[in-house]
Length: 373
Image (cartoon, rainbow, N blue to C red; front, side, top):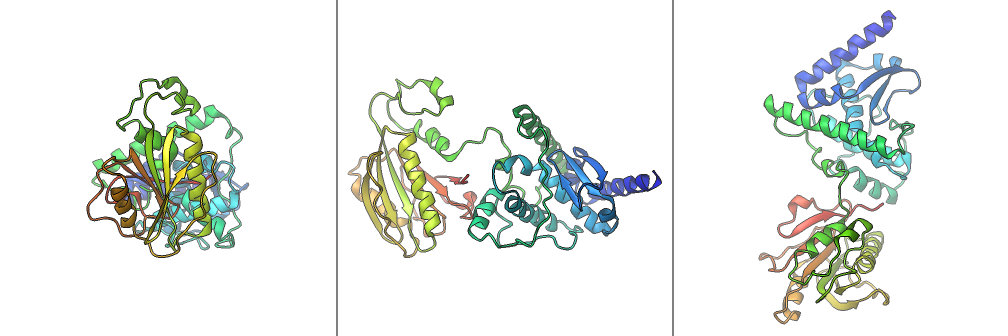
């Protein structure tokens, strides 16, 4: 009992140090229940509670204890347990560790226990993006064998999921409010990339495309909004069709897997929106196309392999539209290339690949991240 009391005092002291160094992390820690246990070899979280191995905790320095607590709290608050879904547990854990360790080590006075993963080339990405990249290089960081993301017994319950999302949403709001009140207005570095993945109402990019399409000047009189919950978006539209031009980046920086991913999304466009009048372009430094698109035709073989220049596509569209502007242009790319100096007058939606340019760095149009399942 005395040992447990001493350990609890150490944990309380660590939370106090968190409050001094980072009110944001300290507030999140208050939303997590800490358990001393021998059932985990080091530390872990089931998305709500944090489990600490007594011997492991005692072996750490004060700075490492701060880092460990922030690490597990971030896993919980960023919903890494819920977001895993059916993905490989170990590979997902590696991706999540890369993200949270990058955030933790950016804080002054925080350290991590020996053996913690650090990958500065990837840590600015979201967990989903890193997981996708690790699938292409499965041996990267495979020395990690301890999984600290535990699945709770109720994890499959819709009620449990909703409650957990609400719990950590409230925690995040309190943490940000307190940090601002105490003069720590900026979120910890790296955290902003993760926040869009926390909303239970997050739309996939095709649903985002729908929001674009309803703003186009066409006749939507016959649309029955009851069908939106069934993902039947354009089937009941009356009047003229919407003209959509789809550009696929086929430059040398886009590998075969990315090309395959992009083309599967093009097929997804056709299936989800059968009333579109769609054309396809392949673009590196040259624009190839247009190729008419329909659900019954096979996609043409990709052409490209050179540098990345977005300007030829927009120049081709300008020359070929004959003063009839498209309802929307969709550009699937990693985002690394030369943008036009003057943005086009028609709507443009950039769909950026995992690991691609930040959506905040796209100079015009709107940008969303393509997160594969």
